Image 1 (tube, rainbow, N blue to C red):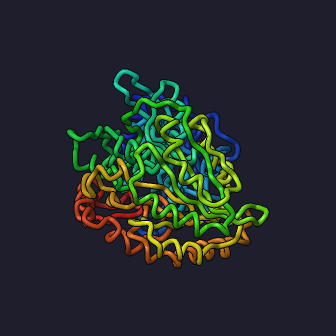
Image 2: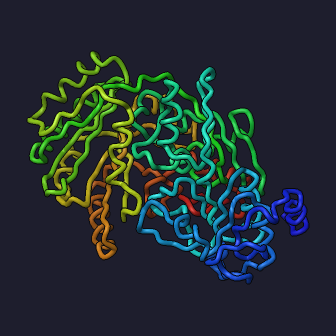
Image 3: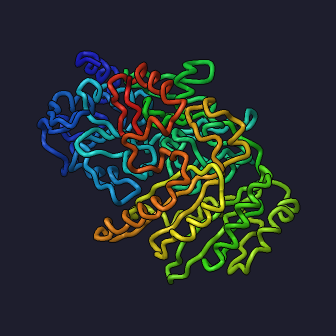
Length: 497
């Protein structure tokens, strides 16, 4: 927006004396630690150094309902921090939005100045793309309200909510939708990338349950998109990542759900990995029910004990579930059989501690079309016996395959599973070693991959086109229409045509 419109909006909002949060604004009450009234250095979309003028910063602070933070603001450091401790970046400005209108103001400010932009929903971007150095962070953390329509079995969810918030709000009413496996993950980036979860064989990916969204595009306009309103943009949001704007709300389809269900972990010593994985490769190809979600894990315990495990969740009649998983329980000699009737949230939060905020982590992944004997051989040969490293899987099939590869932007409908190569540590001096372990494991199995999952992949330069496959041309056209200047590039980026 132009400067006069900024000023008129500020006066109309009557907030000049109400939000003493921005250091560059000449107000009577200012946070002591914030920067002085001066222009500040920043970086443009192409990496050039630019200057953000004092008057413009002040106007942004006045027109927004939420605080705009500069370095030195008492909440600046806590707000800029993201989940992965590997990424310690310092934005020039942080706009903590309270509404879609705030998002519009922040987007206008960035576009008019060609300013680098990062969008933070839950801050859980593995590659750290929800924060940037010397640009603008648009922070949605306060936009986390969830409204459940029990009669219509739908929910509107703020873009700053976490998956745990979504589960809690819907489970209270005996309803659920597919959500991921770490409860402190943000709904925003998770959903836009596709959304794998323990219920996806029954209900599809999270994007298959998106009925609509409220999004602010690069022109500063807020749009409600559905299958009938802006259908191309609605298609692109379901798997195209954060390329098309800032989503401030999602509208989800919900499903009736009994939260006390058969679930848990089966764990064997890694010496039995071949027997377990070979059985799984054959058993899983015979047509498991949609109610059953089961997938392998290979890891090393803190005491050095190597394990192979199966994560199990059965969303249906427990007696039938017991019958279906009985052959798996009969394999080898398990160290632990933790499968029991328990609350859904037990499984949904079991990985929260090992993926706690501040951990330093690196991950890569690959989509697997078939769990073959060759894959089993390579998994065993490449196993990394280190407590900092693990591989786990997100099982697909079932309802995920009910959609064609071009029905949504997400193209990997025919994959049987996704393998994630994970390393995590706390000492910054181990960064190089941690990343190298992950890359080594990934490289050993890469020949089995058929693309990757954008939400996890660290380095995608030169591979985005092939990864989206037949969907890329359409995605690029929609990107050109709604973000021709590539303002939203802190993602697995689809460059405009």
